[in-house]
Image (tube, rainbow, N blue to C red):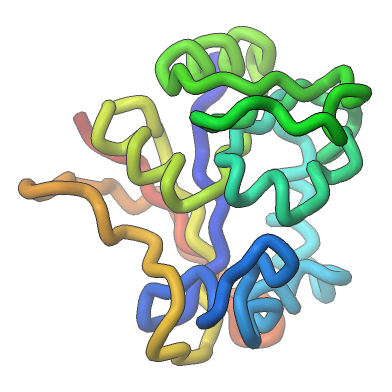
Length: 189
């Protein structure tokens, strides 16, 4: 069975968005800077990383990531199933998105996404979802795309983990093109 892997671009000072995040400004002011290495990926390392997360067997995201991205129009990649973690009712505009399932049950979503992905990994999106999954022991790995920028303000990736250290094992470090560094860690239990 594959792993659950958070793929997240982050500033050197730990932010995953700029300030002023809203539904119509999902990455906040200047937040697109964190994803410039992806659109389009340039060079062999960045292309490899994009290929890896675009070959996962399922996607699990928080509502705050999914909805501002217009639900990726119902297809994040290759028609894989998408679980959206939300306490709110599924919006009407997503009703025709057959691959999308809304749930408020984090553990069930992780279990079902892993089963659907089979031997492939599950791509996890969203800071709140990642934080809750780390606390619950459901997230297996972190793939942090460290972008050489300081935001100073915005949404922090690891701000609600509670008390206590969590040990990580470094799996790899790759120098991407455009200054991005791809860091992969296994979360030790």
